[in-house]
Image 1 (cartoon, helix red, strand yellow):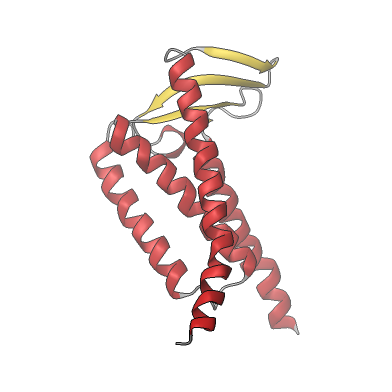
Image 2 (image 1 turned 90 degrees about the vertical axis):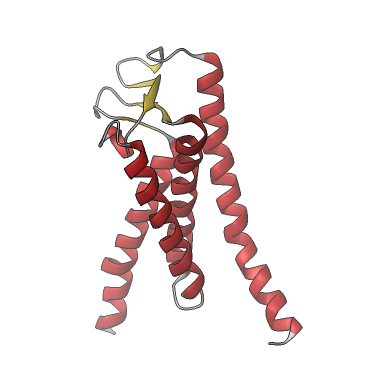
Length: 165
């Protein structure tokens, strides 16, 4: 492999590394602020009867599922992170720009929540849309869900257009 080809590959992947780091920093910084300024259960109304910051320690997975099963959840999450990274690296040249963004978001969210599980024993959740949603979640959960939605859009809409042509 020539030096020029390797530098193009490294340069091309830098956008995704940068996105990963920005998303991870947003997630971890928001959790740090909540953890250092609020007590568990505290709520700060941001938009009355719609959006609050509420400090919750989630010992399960997204949206509070599988509470108290942190060891199993951590093992499954580590496996998922490894599989996502393997798929992303192996298929980097084959997948679309939208899918690269999507997998970067999913990977960033999974790593963000794994950092919490490993170093705190729980995941900090704080985004509370009481008016429309009964679950409290965090930015890592948002990144994961947006990534999944982007993959669905890519496969249902863009791949369908490719097949029709």
